[in-house]
Length: 211
Ligand SMILES: Cc1cc2nc3c(=O)[nH]c(=O)nc-3n(C[C@H](O)[C@H](O)[C@H](O)COP(=O)(O)O)c2cc1C
Image (cartoon, rainbow, N blue to C red; front, side):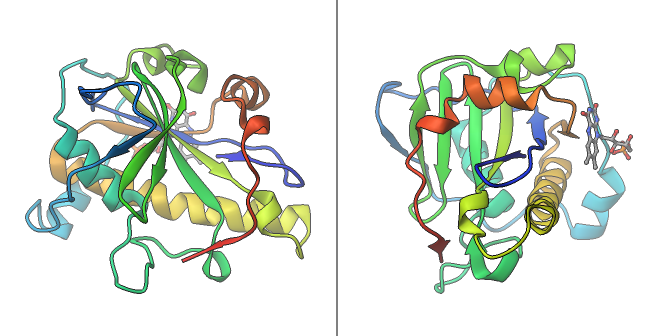
C-alpha cells in the first residue's frame, strides 16, 4: 500500500501467478475487461484450506478472463449501489489498485470494470525487494489516498487505509486459492522509490470518490 499525500508512507503489494493479458492494443488508454465470472470456483472452506503464501511464480500465461475475475474479487463492484466486494472506510474509496505487468502499469477502474493505462513501462522489479517480484507476471500495488481522508490524523489514515488494504488482500488470497494461483501479500518494498517510479505525484488527486 502506498499512501498518498498527507498520509504516512507504507506499501503492500501482492504478486501472483497471472500473466500480463495479451492486449490487442497495448497502448489503448482504456482496456475494458470481460465481465467477471461470478459463479463457480472452490467452496469457501476448501479455498480457506488452500490459502498460503507462495513465492515461486511461473510465467505461464493466464487468460485475460482470469485477470478480470481476480480484480473483481479483489475490490470489484458487486451490487447495484456500486459497493464493493470488500468493506471500506466511511463509504469512501481510499484505495486504488494498480496492476503492474510486463506491458505496463494499469489503474483498475471497478465502476466500468476496466484498466486505465497509467505507465507504459515494466516496473515489476520495483514493486518489491524480493527476487521473484520482477518475474511474477502480475503485481498488484495498493495505493491509499490520504487526501480522501481529510479530517482524521495521519495515524488514523494509516490505520484505516491498512485495514481496507487487508480486506482487499484477503480477497486476492481467497480468489487465488480458489483459482489455483500463487500469491503473497507483501510489505517489503522501497516505498519512496516505487512512489517515484509509478509517478504517483503526477496523478490528478481527485476529491473523495464515493460509490
Ligand atoms: C502485512 C503483511 C506483509 C507481508 N509482507 C511480506 C513480504 O514483504 N514478503 C513476503 O514474502 N511475505 C510477506 N508477507 C507474508 C507473510 O510472511 C506470510 O503470510 C506468513 O509468513 C504466514 O505464511 P502463510 O501466508 O503461508 O500462512 C506479509 C504478510 C502480511 C500480512
